[in-house]
Amino acid sequence: VAALPAMTPEEVLASQLMTEVEAFLQQNPVDASAGERLRQMPQDLQRRVLDKGDLRQARNPSAVLQARMNELEGQSMKEGLGLPAPPPGEDGHPGVEALIATYNLDAR
Image (tube, rainbow, N blue to C red; front, side, top):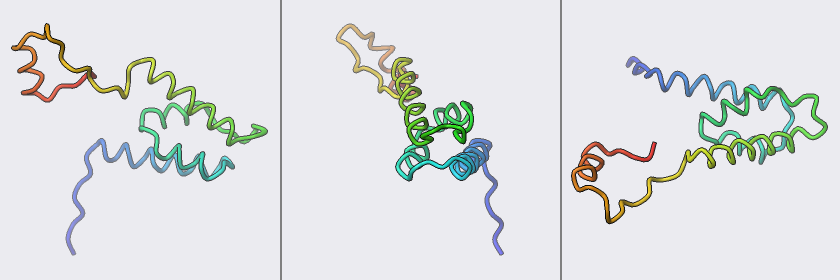
Protein backbone atom coordinates (compact mmCIF):
# COMPACT_ATOMS: atom_id res chain seq x y z
CA VAL A 1 0.00 0.00 0.00
CA ALA A 2 1.48 3.30 -1.08
CA ALA A 3 1.75 6.06 1.50
CA LEU A 4 -0.25 9.20 0.90
CA PRO A 5 1.87 12.26 0.11
CA ALA A 6 2.21 14.72 2.96
CA MET A 7 0.00 17.78 2.70
CA THR A 8 1.54 21.22 2.64
CA PRO A 9 0.46 23.66 5.36
CA GLU A 10 -1.59 25.54 2.74
CA GLU A 11 -3.38 22.34 1.74
CA VAL A 12 -4.13 21.55 5.39
CA LEU A 13 -5.62 25.03 5.92
CA ALA A 14 -7.65 24.78 2.71
CA SER A 15 -8.99 21.38 3.77
CA GLN A 16 -9.92 22.69 7.22
CA LEU A 17 -11.69 25.70 5.69
CA MET A 18 -13.59 23.45 3.26
CA THR A 19 -14.75 21.38 6.24
CA GLU A 20 -15.84 24.54 8.06
CA VAL A 21 -17.73 25.81 5.00
CA GLU A 22 -19.59 22.51 4.68
CA ALA A 23 -20.42 22.49 8.40
CA PHE A 24 -21.67 26.10 8.13
CA LEU A 25 -23.93 25.12 5.22
CA GLN A 26 -25.25 22.10 7.13
CA GLN A 27 -26.08 24.24 10.19
CA ASN A 28 -27.57 27.15 8.25
CA PRO A 29 -30.52 26.44 5.95
CA VAL A 30 -29.64 28.26 2.72
CA ASP A 31 -30.67 27.51 -0.84
CA ALA A 32 -28.41 25.54 -3.17
CA SER A 33 -27.30 28.55 -5.22
CA ALA A 34 -26.18 30.51 -2.14
CA GLY A 35 -24.32 27.48 -0.81
CA GLU A 36 -22.57 26.90 -4.13
CA ARG A 37 -21.60 30.55 -4.37
CA LEU A 38 -19.98 30.35 -0.93
CA ARG A 39 -18.10 27.20 -1.95
CA GLN A 40 -16.76 28.96 -5.06
CA MET A 41 -15.53 32.10 -3.27
CA PRO A 42 -11.83 32.70 -2.68
CA GLN A 43 -10.69 31.26 0.65
CA ASP A 44 -10.02 34.64 2.26
CA LEU A 45 -13.60 35.74 1.53
CA GLN A 46 -15.01 32.39 2.69
CA ARG A 47 -13.23 32.92 6.02
CA ARG A 48 -14.66 36.43 6.34
CA VAL A 49 -18.20 35.19 5.59
CA LEU A 50 -17.90 32.46 8.23
CA ASP A 51 -16.47 34.91 10.76
CA LYS A 52 -19.67 36.97 10.53
CA GLY A 53 -21.49 34.19 12.37
CA ASP A 54 -24.39 31.84 11.83
CA LEU A 55 -27.67 32.56 10.07
CA ARG A 56 -30.05 30.48 12.17
CA GLN A 57 -31.87 33.50 13.57
CA ALA A 58 -32.27 35.19 10.19
CA ARG A 59 -35.74 35.32 8.68
CA ASN A 60 -34.25 34.59 5.24
CA PRO A 61 -30.82 32.96 5.71
CA SER A 62 -30.15 32.70 1.96
CA ALA A 63 -30.72 36.43 1.47
CA VAL A 64 -28.50 37.29 4.43
CA LEU A 65 -25.73 35.01 3.12
CA GLN A 66 -26.01 36.54 -0.36
CA ALA A 67 -25.85 40.04 1.13
CA ARG A 68 -22.74 39.16 3.15
CA MET A 69 -21.03 37.73 0.10
CA ASN A 70 -21.98 40.79 -2.00
CA GLU A 71 -20.63 43.11 0.70
CA LEU A 72 -17.34 41.26 1.04
CA GLU A 73 -16.83 40.96 -2.71
CA GLY A 74 -17.48 44.69 -3.04
CA GLN A 75 -14.95 45.44 -0.32
CA SER A 76 -12.31 43.25 -1.93
CA MET A 77 -12.80 45.00 -5.27
CA LYS A 78 -12.40 48.40 -3.57
CA GLU A 79 -9.20 47.14 -1.96
CA GLY A 80 -7.93 46.15 -5.39
CA LEU A 81 -7.89 42.44 -4.64
CA GLY A 82 -8.59 40.15 -7.52
CA LEU A 83 -7.65 42.69 -10.17
CA PRO A 84 -4.87 41.98 -12.64
CA ALA A 85 -1.86 44.25 -12.81
CA PRO A 86 -2.28 47.13 -15.23
CA PRO A 87 -0.26 46.86 -18.43
CA PRO A 88 3.13 48.54 -18.33
CA GLY A 89 3.02 52.13 -19.44
CA GLU A 90 5.23 53.73 -22.02
CA ASP A 91 7.17 55.40 -19.23
CA GLY A 92 7.98 52.07 -17.50
CA HIS A 93 11.67 51.60 -16.78
CA PRO A 94 13.06 48.66 -18.80
CA GLY A 95 15.02 47.37 -15.80
CA VAL A 96 11.91 47.30 -13.61
CA GLU A 97 9.89 45.62 -16.36
CA ALA A 98 12.64 42.99 -16.71
CA LEU A 99 12.54 42.25 -12.95
CA ILE A 100 8.76 41.92 -13.04
CA ALA A 101 8.98 39.47 -15.93
CA THR A 102 11.91 37.52 -14.44
CA TYR A 103 10.27 36.99 -11.05
CA ASN A 104 6.70 36.68 -12.35
CA LEU A 105 5.45 39.50 -10.11
CA ASP A 106 1.89 40.75 -10.11
CA ALA A 107 -0.10 43.61 -8.59
CA ARG A 108 -0.33 42.00 -5.15
